[in-house]
Length: 450
Image (cartoon, one colour):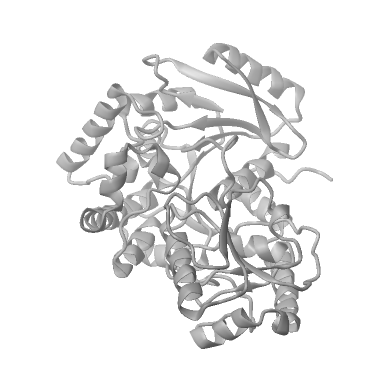
């Protein structure tokens, strides 16, 4: 992966990679940009012919705790690797790669956008330092067939590439429709969640972003500016990809009102590998997986803690994932923390409990639980954009939920039936082969011969 705009002025740090059979890349020692380019050319000469693709990410893919978005990014890279020559780059930001020059550059980009009457969202401005964008554009070879951009946060680079290369094919992976996410946060009265950047923010900025009044003001600003920017991306990109059919429908409605819109809107639900399923056995426990640094997880965790207190639930509840808050836990609730493998969680006794209070996207934790043969208890929001049919554990009534929580072993047959239905759904709708084939089609690469 190439990280441009490093601390040494216009220098670049390039990590060459050695590919493993599973598509995961291992970093070797950093080399110079010229040496890395030579290494790429040599590798291209040795491998089967295939289109040249440039993938621009906004975060490190390797060496980070795996979460929903990272799993999708890994799957995209693994799908393309066998049939194309890949060059991966990381666009730096003022949050993860903070220095004075980059802060000034991002500030100038934000000020310039206001002067043009097209204000940048803050989440885009932090990736918009002009020097970084120019260095990235220069590093991407002009003979690549397609450029992949990791989200709307790459808007500055998209704008520059389209101006410099009007005929370049560019695919922008939105993942979720961010204006809709901000709209849902506004409706819920919630502040902005910086997500994976939370721990990298200076403490005073973290407090500002997550405070009630200022945080909601930021959400309103992001909503208004993202909605306008999504229209611009529709006129600049060739293809925009989303995980959720509901997000895609919302963007399609925006497209219909956008003069000059050129982008195709594609939906590619996340993939999940089927793990070895274990039949449900007593005694059962309930689990939740996710960090409370994300708003949607925090809302669910707070509800579950309150539910265990109010209803005196005796069944055990284990909340996995890195928790950033020091909240008190009611009896029978534990926080084991982050685990390296989901095999440590899904043991044949675990029931995923994830009622959701924020719509949007597809909940990958649900797909993961189904893939391990575990049942998932949720509500309508939990299963948004998942056509699971008449699923027995879609529960919107608290007394009905509490009846299961008080006697999980007595509901073993229903839980097992739900687990079987969920696993069959994942197998038919989220197969890795279908995901890989769709992404290869969108990026214009052939499927490798068996």
